[in-house]
Length: 282
Image (cartoon, rainbow, N blue to C red; front, side, top):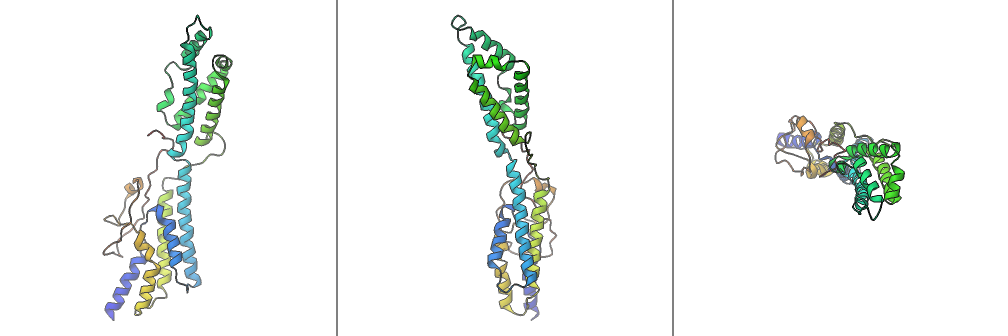
């Protein structure tokens, strides 16, 4: 009987101890736990399961905010801005290359090139924030120095309109115009993931309260209800983590521990780095 109770206690402890999950998997873990939940849940157990879903939603909200200001999200507006300036520069260069005896606009185009683009499109190697800043300076110079009418005489006005439109789009993307989308705090994903892990452990404890350790069927039912943990838990040599884990990137494949230690110290880990959201070049 003692061995049976000890085995049951070890099994329960495996699931009631907070477990690390890849933050990309939290919502799926929550959904699996809900679909595997016993039909006989009491009110306390239902509240614990609802909290698991709420914490998984919180993790996804942090990830969603990061995607809104991530480098890939800014790459399109930045490239549109660079493309608009490149088109304008190319058109001016084409007119400047026309022999002056053919068109008087050639000299005007050469003057504009020397004034606005003495070194070409310098922003081509800049991140989104730098591209917006240099574009703002150029556009302000064009307006303040009265260069817009001159540009419209040399090249199609549509090209400058494209620059203005691209600048407005980039400004909205980097938060210079309109409502600013802020990058979540450095530890936001770490803390949301930790809260989810503790909520899962809390749900397991709520289920364990009603278990009779001498009834193998109840232990088996408990294990089946918590099987999502076995599928998605993350184990990489140790349950002890440091701040360096906050800077890890890439997916972490879930593994099932062969001999879980319920007494091992634990700190949940974030699986994502905090990137400069404005870096958009490869």
